[in-house]
Length: 82
Image (cartoon, rainbow, N blue to C red; front, side):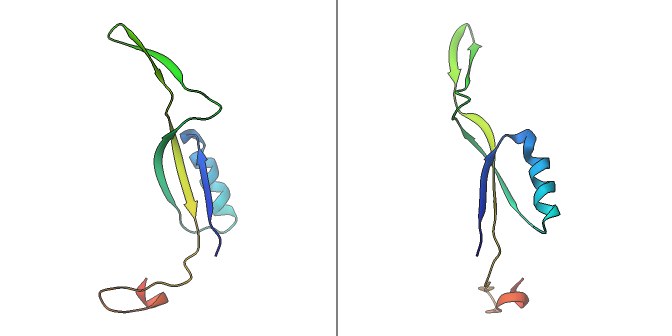
């Protein structure tokens, strides 16, 4: 089993999706997350007060093949469960 997990900037999602598709990845799950690192966030004004936004929007992607699947309701396994 292989798993690829990446935290990227939202505007890079299309590039990453195209790159993965070009090497044969046929599906993926994408989650919106927030975080900080080297970017350190930025300062904004709200109602006259200054505050720091240090959790910036990110996209979390993970891709991995499923080696086995079971449909709980029927007991079907693998390809027939999909």
